[in-house]
Image 1: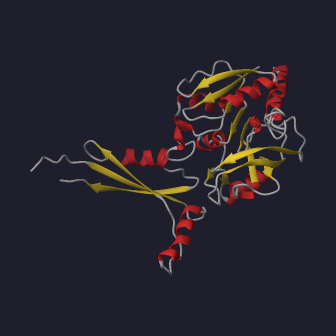
Image 2: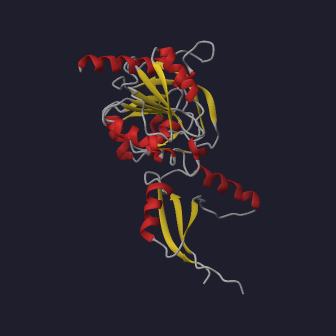
Image 3: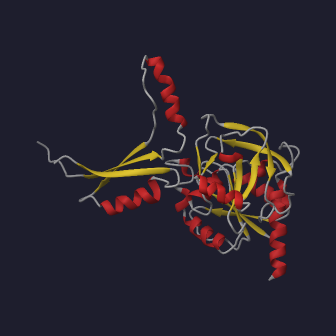
Length: 227
Length: 87
């Protein structure tokens, strides 16, 4: 399995995301913001950081990168795409996910280990978790407050498209404690906290994050077996 | 007198929608009593963007720039107007 990780100017967590992919047992493939070639990958990760300096709005300029045109087309055709932190912001700006991520309610940058509850295991990236399972992974953002209008939030709730919620304190004022959401098909997931920083006991608060990367491999194997 | 070239400038104002919390504006509002200012109900912060066209202002293009890039319609709204450059 080949999993692509995009590097934008200002990406920070692309290295850790590639490492998480390798630890999960897949081949990591570097993708470049300025190159539309997806290099035959089976899935794509948009990593955290500050793409294009986050000038204007987080993710606003990255959305127009040549690689994003290919990713939007691939995502609409069913390819698994995971956006982490800045990657989540890019997915919202690219309209692959509804809503937006804005400045934390308290204006402080929050960097801590965060407990989450997995609310949906019917996605390409969370199929290995139990619904209701609690995990601990780092969160680090200044603009992580998920917002959408009430109708969109209700639709997300009704469609079981809220993938994870913050537990033991909401770090940024996110609506309805939302930490992660998915698209209708379940192949596209955006998450504010960082599973790629919790894949090894030495460096993470847990190894709970690994489940996102192994889930997609299981998903892809099952999809491959079906075709 | 030096020759001034006519510049067609379009000014775009981007504001968070009224229902979106603006913690930056709140922080400013909270600082006002320290200036001895009372009676301010609320402060909201937005962005002003000036686009200069070579030649005539292309309002249609400015509208597209604002709609697709400068503002995110999920959280923001914008207004735009042509501002006369130096004659």
